[in-house]
Image (cartoon, rainbow, N blue to C red; front, side, top):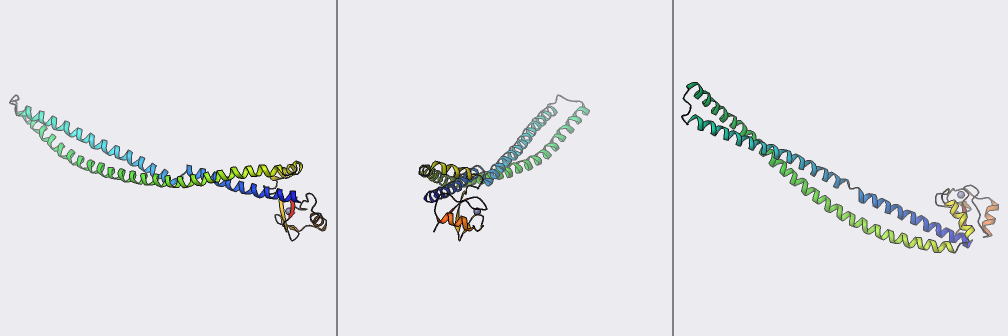
Length: 234
Ligand SMILES: [Zn+2]
């Protein structure tokens, strides 16, 4: 009976170790996945790409306008140089410089719009960068707390495993072998406490023979229903 009680203490220790190990596992996955951080990273990446795109469009337009200005200046230089005297040709040149001037007005307006878009996206990029920094900071704080909890749990589990090892040595090997073999089929609970002559795990009341055997406190007595090793605590 004393051995069964010692086994029962081992079972309690094992169940505690299992709970703590589950928590360690959940901390590991929590530390890996942080939805808020992932979202902030994705938004920052999108804002970055959108800003790059707008900045390139504005730069391309600026270059196009510069080329146009150059072309117009060259055309005007030629127009007023006196090199051309043919009236038809002069008229064509005049029309071309005018067309270039009109085109520049259109492009200037487009540049204004593109610069506005670029500035707007720059602001969005700055905002998403600030949000990302905040999310990273929060993630760091959370991780520090989780890490501290995990370290404490790991230490406790290590101590408990050592205690379990020591406790097993006190149990007759044959008995521990039976207990250990029942762990998996009995969901880590090979031992059940008897409460008012009923097994507390399956709830079945035990017959007279079983009760007498338990009361004699000799060896291991199994629940007549679930087969667990029964123990009377009081
Ligand atoms: Zn039972």
